[in-house]
Length: 71
Image (cartoon, rainbow, N blue to C red; front, side, top):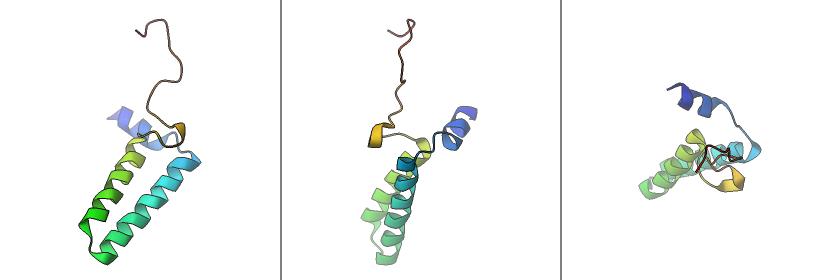
């Protein structure tokens, strides 16, 4: 649980903030137009923002450096 909390509270870059605003706009549009398919897209983008996953702008959840222990 602490790992998720740290992942949620750290690493906020401009790209992540833009994705948050984009997901909010998509979800708002889906609610106003009563379109559940667009809503699913908005929820998916919101999930990526919350978990900081995805490869948008180089913010992949992969380690930046390899250590000798990695195989």
